[in-house]
Image (cartoon, rainbow, N blue to C red; front, side, top):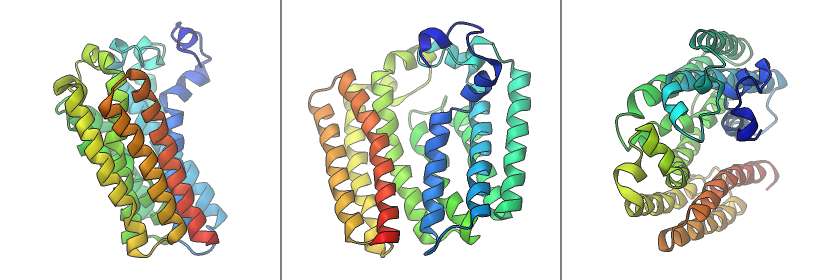
Length: 297
């Protein structure tokens, strides 16, 4: 969907306006990480009711949280070129309708997780996405340039949710997966914030490139990337993965580091955008390799 089309009031069908509010691309990545957590939690196959119920329930609750995020940030989104086209920012979908929509799909997701998975998964998922929609969006994001670090735990939780769906527990292995995403989040998001910094200046949000400048942000991206590479070695050290994962994690980490070093040496918005896009590919491939190592090696 191009912004030139979607920014025109009434250009989207009503169903698509609500679909946009759930931030489907971000939701897809969250559900993908949850599914990986499900399969890593068992040496065999995930039972189909748990798999389907977990995917649908987590997707609905994540979508509900993102819809509330759009509602809370309605005024901020309207100031930013990247988000001003959203139906919440343009007023195409009213706050009352967003609230009702979020409550309906969130409640449906909670019931599905309770019935097809277990109460632990339901409560963890509810807590995770309430933490994102309220604690992060409402309290932390406008208060501190470290918002993405402090609030990153909510975004890092999906593997633990998937693990809980299968085992009704959250073991140390699940927390290792959470740690990887938690450490990955700052360099991923700050790369976006760098090439979108003019948007964040307009929004008034205290994002790190706005409050501390480009060089300080680049230094933080570099340091967090080094910590991330170290964190990705932990599954092998702990014994939950083998050499195939270890070698792949090192190679992927070095490629990510090469992007970050190049960005640090000679910054450009174009390179920051490439780094941001690769960070998504990096996380996806890392988790796929974990899965391959788990089942086939």
